[in-house]
Image (tube, rainbow, N blue to C red; front, side, top):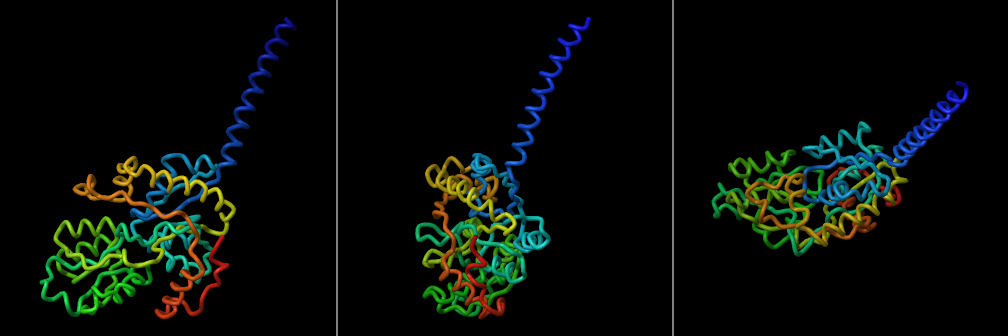
Length: 309
């Protein structure tokens, strides 16, 4: 009887040891995979992030990247202010405004820059606007204190707009911007893709695109509390960009689901090429800061070293 008890005790000990090994392994795994909550908008620039999550590139770097969608930049910025996010997709003006307001964020990489081969933004004229009125005073729907206002000020200097007096009107939500353009409640709008293609498909006329420019348009950012994850994040993100650039058609369905491509454009909408990841240069950041100071958005420039990892 005694021997049987010892034998059973031995089996119980073995089971207990195996249970502890399994639990330890699970605990170790959960500790090593650190969560990074990234606020995003449903736009084409964020497709590499979606690829990284789908293909497991972030997971392979022990990162649990959670993409938190927002319908507007204002909602995303509010979440960043309240500490709900560890980083976000946006533009340089948004990053600089957060730093100005003592939210310690840093540039991770440029996510998209102007490219002569493909358009990302377009100045569209309403289909309800007579062609004879295109040369004159036009109201233009934009979001102020953003890359779109920055881009509009550069577009005003192009030959295609020299006969136009473009008056910016703030309409924060892009879907409303598009609706007002198509119904003639606003003369023009500066829109990103795929809204440019959708507006064109519904009769709006394209004046000029971002393609002649030479500038970063959007960026990824990280909170300083998570700065130690920047290297691992960028390793995975670079893999995502390379995978997307090498086999773009593989990710058409993913783009359709996550970037709000209209149904009638799904098969024909171009698959974009994305720039090699890099941090914005000091000159590129300074150009944006100079513009922001002229607009009264900044009172003094923010040192470049406060903006990079």
